[in-house]
Image (cartoon, rainbow, N blue to C red; front, side, top):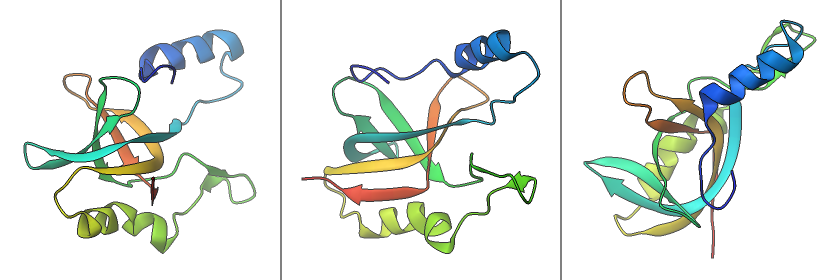
Length: 124
């Protein structure tokens, strides 16, 4: 992400595949983003710092990280599974500066980007 602009996930996946072929698989993209927590249409969103991008927020559905020894997706800790819920519980309905980390995915319809919150921290 540069200058508050969000990555083009489909083009990243295509470029990655063009460079490495089928030898590796891009399981997803995890981002850490600073912004202002807000509400839009009854949903929590993050207004990304340094630009006009807005990310829809959602609970963690699965991690990008891979457990090589176990040959499976790395399991999420309880804190990671509860991060989105806890973020919502601690939010008081006023804009709040935060840093969020988690998988960034594109919604099936409309190309809306959704950040699945794995971790969060307040920012000054």
